[in-house]
Image 1 (spheres, rainbow, N blue to C red):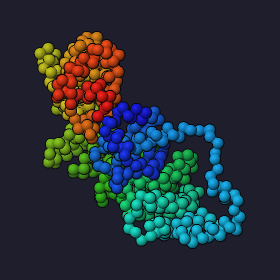
Image 2 (image 1 turned 60 degrees about the vertical axis):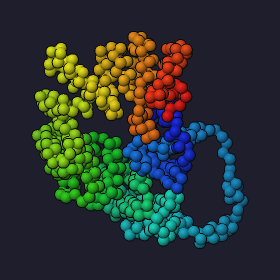
Image 3 (image 1 turned 135 degrees about the horizontal axis):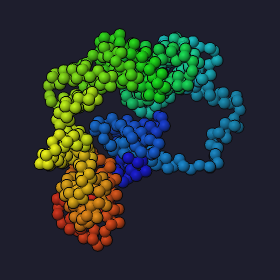
Image 4 (image 1 turned 45 degrees about the vertical axis):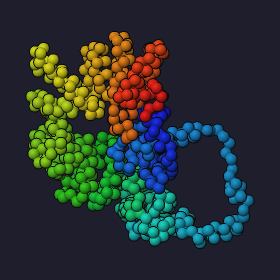
Length: 562
């Protein structure tokens, strides 16, 4: 979704609710990725938003648990970020000196020292910050010293309280970053130092544990880990010193492997992002070091390790090393996310027999058929890559209601050249696609559009789409062709079709539907006389079931997307 046109693509009711929320402590964690707290009355949500270089929203998260959809809290952050970007365009103003800066220039050193001493005596966190910044002695940092600093920072902000509110948490994180800055700097000056790394890693571990203990969200913990590890990755990204590379990556991998906690998984996640930026040689080296460690680990300790191993499988796959270490990754019954990553790596490594056996084994063990689908899809991919045309055709027919693959449909037609048989294949495919569209399957939408476009029959396009809900992007794509064939049928079909869906949570109505509705309104006004489209609207509004469901009709009438 383009950020600049969010008002046209998010429902007005959702925007109205979002505007009532308070967005605070919004940080641009990295270029284009914003993380913030959104207050809904007394309830606070942790929200993130990712925007690419083209100004499009590519990802968003919220801990309100509505299944990854665009919720009110994400909408509030979109509004905030958009307005913030507009307001920051004021440049070229002359800097105005703040009153305190003027006063600071006039105060004497003696008075300033006396005032500072009084402030420090009554403020524990400033004492710690001051000592960290201005202590002149050379320090040797140990894990125990880091743990003590972390606890001192926590106590300075919340004293003996068990939990921290969002304001206290932000102050605590800021203080921890300041207290531990010398530790990080000391290690980065000598990345080959094992003792230096232990102190560096203890920052991640001790702060992460304390953040979770005081009720910080996983997003905030991950953000802190990214901040700390990012400093090391910046050094490794540019170093040409193999000694530094080997030592530092070795330290990182050993600390992740020996812990295997949620914190270690967050570190591994950050390492994977770093891995994707590396040259092929360094990718292979990093993956090989990880694989050598994990090949020795025989048991799984908790759920986070499944996720970590899935990431390592992915790194091995991308580095073309999986086949050499496949024995280190056994299948795990009912762990579909892990198993599917494992099978995909096997397929890419051309371990076709092993991949097929694993899929069949998991399908046999599944209690419900719905859990078979990921493995059946992988079998289809396996047969495609291995060149087994017979089995590929069989699996493609079984899975067509999920894949809606147009190339598979063409294969079905080729299988039997008889005209009557091909007609039956076509009708069955269209019926499956219609059912898929009603279930909001975007693949079904694309398939039906591709099929109808291939025949060029504009009359059939109007007939099919006027009896289906939604499908507004497809109406846009075919508009000119349908207008030239049957302008009256096109306008009637658009305004008299029935739509439905859970609009409040955007379960059915996705962002691209709203964008298409706006475009269709413009196309109608450009291609028809005003009296014609107004008459069509008035006729459609007399049908209650249409008037209260057709989103284009409602938008044409009120100018509101809701």
